[in-house]
Amino acid sequence: MEQLLKILVIIHIAAGTGALIFGAIAFVFRKNTPKHKRIGMIYFWCMSIVFVTAMIVSIAKSLLFLFLIGIFSYYSTIIAYRSLRLKNLHNGQKPFKTDWFIEILAGVTFSGMVALGAIIIIKNGNVGGLVPLVFGLFGLLSVRTNLKLFINGPKETLYWYKKHIGHMMGSYIGAFTAFLVNQTPHIPIHPTLLWFLPTLIIMPVMVMEMKKVKSKPIGA
Image 1 (cartoon, rainbow, N blue to C red):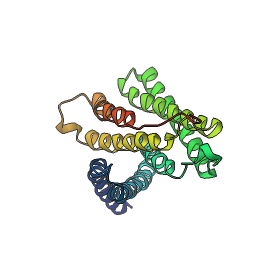
Image 2: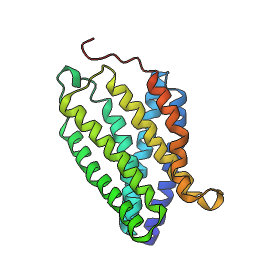
Image 3: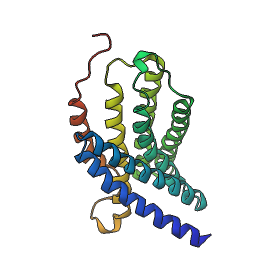
Image 4: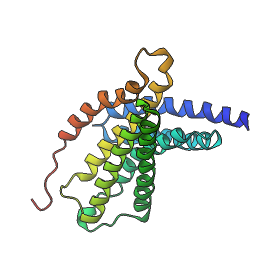
């Protein structure tokens, strides 16, 4: 069993490295549709492998936090992918059962992260509880936004493109965060700050990219 876990950890690290590399390349080629699609799919499958291996290792070693963070990171990946399948919600398309299932599972997971963070802060007075608390709240906000989209329909034409950009870059934030946190002993920054550093770096870029999207109100 230990040998199998070691192999899974190696696969996890290799796939995570691939995600970091191909995610950056996909961003560079974001305006070259054929290359972006091919590279983006490689990134998607790298993140899928990262997710599966993280789930197995976290369950085998009873690492609740790794389990929750693994779902959080992959949630953004899968929503970015699914957004390309939901381009016609404004034309009567209905979300698939898969989409509802993803949001329900994510909602339960993010609620667990918020609860875990609150318990850590209240019981131990540990600022480390801010990590699951903040990530969980961000996740719940995203779930709320997506459920409103499913129920009420989109209010703009390129809603799916903005969702793809936002969640794919959010997914990359997760991959980048995992990499940095694993380098904690070698980086002279408080571990809690290290968890939020990729968000602080990438979030402004994500906002700028989404502002470039020329989306129009539905019916305009």
